[in-house]
Amino acid sequence: MLILAIESSCDETAAAVVEERKILSSVINTQVEEHKKYGGVVPEVASRRHCENISQVVKKALEDAGKTYSDINAVAVTFAPGLIGALLVGVNFAKGLALSLNVPLIPVHHLRSHIAANYIDNEELKPPFLCLTVSGGNSIITDVSDYTDFKVIGQTRDDAAGECFDKAARAMGLPYPGGINLDKIAKTADTVKYPLPRPKVEGSEYDFSFSGLKTAVINLIHNSSQKGEEVDIPVLAATLRQRVCDMLISNTLKAAEELDRETIVLAGGVSANSELRARMKSECEKRGIKLYYPELKYCGDNAAMVGVQAFYEYRSGNIADSKLNATAKLPIDYRK
Image (cartoon, rainbow, N blue to C red):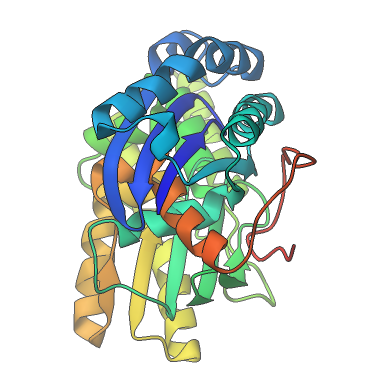
């Protein structure tokens, strides 16, 4: 089954041709350089660029796969969650394309597709497993009992881990995208020099809270500036990274133990973080737990992962009609 997949939930216009877990092509047009001057994604700009780029991105994906529209058996698209204007571009393009080709339209949840990125290079990976999905907009622990059966175990109560990294990095004077550049310059953590808090959510041991940690970093930088004191940015960056990873790893391992899961999966943009990968791998090895995480090229937004998840959504009967609409917010465990 050949699926043409489309992704436009934020600032990447992407398309891919996928055959079950096999990626025949994956094309991404990124807007990072344009949004860099604003220090973050400007939704209106992102939407306009999607409109300008989507036709050519889809055409290139077909060319790279050596396929034509007539070869396509289904069209898949990210319909939620994300920036509503950006999502609408992809959804409406996909609806028109599916209608003109007379093929099924498969709606795909963005976080489900991030999890599916792990299936691409890991043939043996299959549910059940526990997944930690971390990005600029989400931090969530999900029990994946089947390819389309998800249960939320824990999630952030405020900022996502990626948002914490990005906003703290901006306060440190690091260029956009902040989280990536923070990870690059972080050296050795010093919890004595910079005693950042260890936030916990009382009464909910698997949930996260990153807002206070982000605020503590911003206040530390502002207070040091007012006193004329220099901040050791690489050390502060490493200390922040350590704190965030402490929470992510600790809560995930506790959930895995409670649910008796022998496999843990990482997903989302922050799954590319070097400390998170290294420390989670070490902790899983100590406990005899299998760990999977995507190739770096599949950690960020892409259409290949959308196409892979679409195959399982199609198999479960999740097919949309012309009434499909984009949705800015939707839980991963939604029921059609």
